[in-house]
Length: 141
Image (cartoon, rainbow, N blue to C red; front, side, top):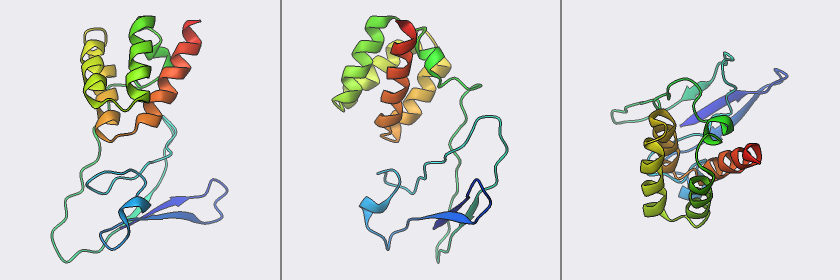
């Protein structure tokens, strides 16, 4: 499977390849199925190309979009400072159970935000979560 991402200056494409014939560590995201990181800008139309070849049936399922653009530092900054600090610590330590527990606490404050964070956690994209948390903490000070 190959994902073709056009260069900003229209000089060609960046190609990300994945598949069963390639080593697991070469995947964009270390996940059981094939998942690509997409460098998309909110509210900007962009064309991407996906090429795949399979002798078997294949199901393509896009990730569900969260309501609006809820995964923003501004939205995380509305959470209690102590909750964000615990969330950063759990995420930084890759403590799966604690991350899940804190996301459930966040659900009491903002359901859509919690759902978006849960999707990132399910993909083990802790780097993206930490980036959001740290930007949010900067807004709280």
